[in-house]
Length: 275
Image 1: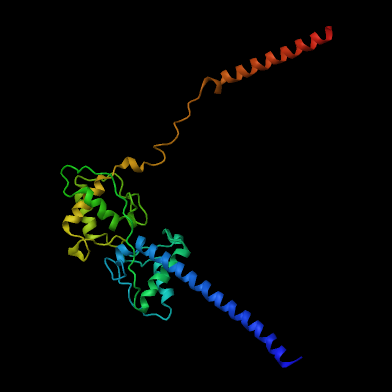
Image 2: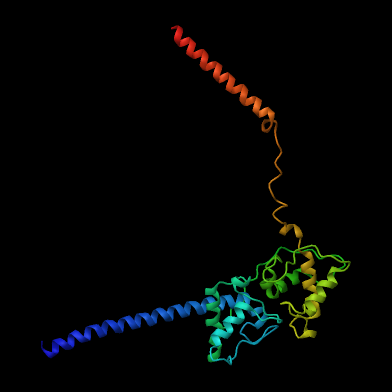
């Protein structure tokens, strides 16, 4: 075989291999880009409220940094999945009772670890706030519940649910026991709950919220009507009421109908025989 023909036969597989490698790289790049975009969205919806819009830290740790580990992705993944015991970082994976799937956590990793190379040019998008109808202020409770609704969406909904129905945090749409439930809620927001994932939100305790903002939040939480979150039993199907057909009345009716059918059948048979 001529050398030129052998060379052509060798070049063709190399060209095909090159195309395959380029296609694979493009596919990986597209997947990474998709994961990055999903991670940015998930971070805005679930993490930015505690860790800051760009990982700079807020009531949670700073994430926009170099992670001191041989495998930083394993460290960050473990923290997201399992939380940090004794700290305000909850477990986010579904297998530990959180809301995020394994694929969503992988996307979060891609986004968070992108900060190790010096950050990203675009800012994390802020979560969308759904406006609520005007709320009537509660008598004898300081604060504006309408301003509290905005603050709740920005700071609390990620853990307590958009309507206070509970998520990885406690249910807030409920009856609050005590003579002064407003003071109990205020203290919890200001100081957090030691040993739980509820952090302190007041500026006096290192949080981001002023006294006035906490008053607004208290007013909003107390304005949540419990009827919006009734248990299934409240709206369940009315209890079954037995009718007269379900007892002996039904039995007698069945016997009567059966007798009529039997008599009619005998009559028709006799009539046919006499013809």
